[in-house]
Length: 236
Image 1: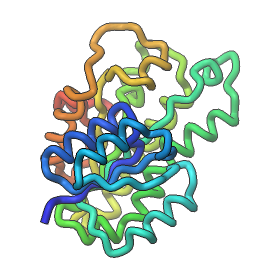
Image 2 (image 1 turned 180 degrees about the vertical axis):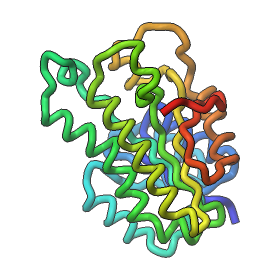
Image 3 (image 1 turned 135 degrees about the vertical axis):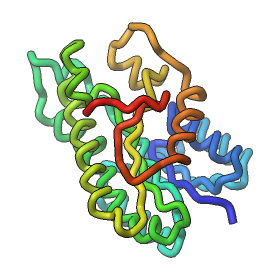
């Protein structure tokens, strides 16, 4: 039987590339997106690969998370990949504005959703062979590296918080054989990066990042360290 992975935020960017590469590697891929009718590239990819199934999921909705877990009851999942994320309006998270509604939404998507997904899909992961839960984080969550530049308060806070959530989760489920991965994809040329206003060096393409991240998912241990796509351990 092929290994099974569930990918959130699969309609574009890193998520779409994860779906593509895992499907080409022979995995059974459950690809989730908030707006399936509008996810043209994902639907075209699924039409070309019989091992991709599509599910509608807004990770900002606890009801939708629980409904999908119920629909997939009895389905083993080897890797639960929490890829969906939201930058939020960068101007509304500057020191001059600090819009609280934006803060709540960024936290709901980036911090609460991965933890809620882990809880809802725990039976599916336990039924899988590999038993892995992964979150895509960001190097911007590193307290050590934050001294380089400011702004993006909400996004940074949300990613630092999800790192702590996943480390806490690992401590709780280690005895059940589950491995939790906290992986940073690097500065990838995606819509999120472009919306952040970053124009510096070191930007890579999604295929390069995803190929490297997949290697680290394969090699996961139960240490729950924050790891860059290159394999470098990032400071918290």
